[in-house]
Length: 100
Image: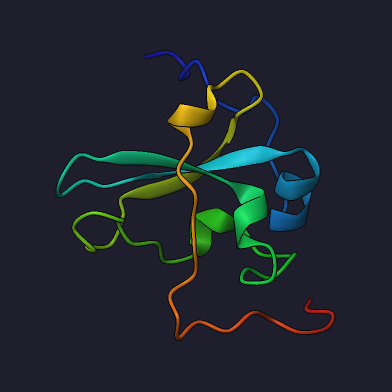
């Protein structure tokens, strides 16, 4: 069982580091089998800089069930069509000021 072609080789310690490295976040759903990749940068202000994305609760964009996994991936070689654009729901508020 090998590593996926888009896998990140070195562990990412925080969301802030994932953004600095311009990585993507892949959300995989066990229920419907969908796999979607977002730019980590799309979540700035909504996820704390020190957060570990693997410990956050994610939902599938299609069936809204809890996602199986979330992980960082390299997106520099991906086509723009392969990336989904995340937009916050109207009720979600962006974080203000420094968040630890």
